[in-house]
Image (cartoon, rainbow, N blue to C red; front, side, top):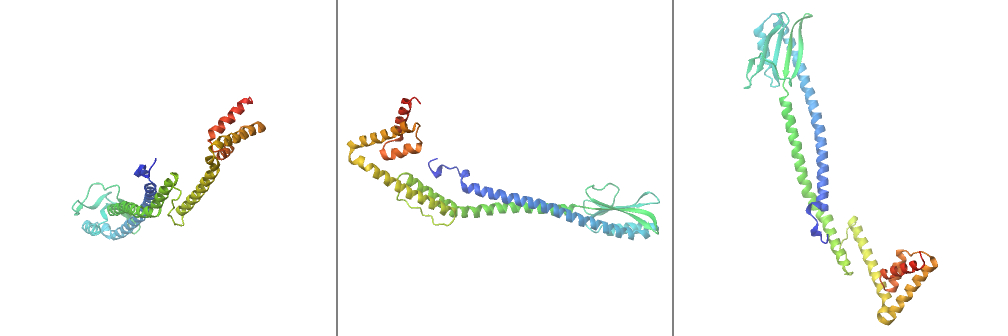
Length: 304
């Protein structure tokens, strides 16, 4: 990779950071949404069940007299009145004496109250009560409460969570794209361009980053490296001046240093480290391969 343009768009730091942030925020939102969904569902189901219980208690009390008098018309009128509440989808009254259904009301698809003889949706909340008169059970009551309104509310809540995740993702992408470009990406591109120029020998380049964060710290490190390179280049240039001024003496100077290097091997009886090889190379103005070759030659002569 020789240029920043060679980096694929999906492999850039900006895309990685934005993707990670979107994923994290989405995951948190989903978890919170699921917990909230279940919490609301439990709360509203309890409220619906409590409503059904209170309704069953009230209706069972109201049915005591008409049931005792076997007044079917009054029983039906009472059931029709209770079905005026949209959450109640059906009421069934059983006569204890006849062991059968005394009255049953429900709604059809047009929301009209009708006599009902079928079975109700098992997903409905069902509450039963005995109808008691003077300590004697004279009948029973079953009230069916629909969950449709609750389910519709929960569906709307889930849609809201999904919409929130989408909005958050778009907002995070736009905001982070602007912030990362100005705070991180542009300074890094400047540092990379300056470092490339220095690597080509342009040691007069300057790092135009003045931030006090990690990017600024990185720029300071590059500046220190630049100063060190300048000093090193001056030292190399200074050490090589005698050899450049007197070409005839260059070979003799290098041979003397290499001979001294070989003598060191004889005295110490071991191969030198890379550090010592490059140290002598900087003085001798020769490449390390020459020194390595000389070291191996002497080493082999000693039968190592």
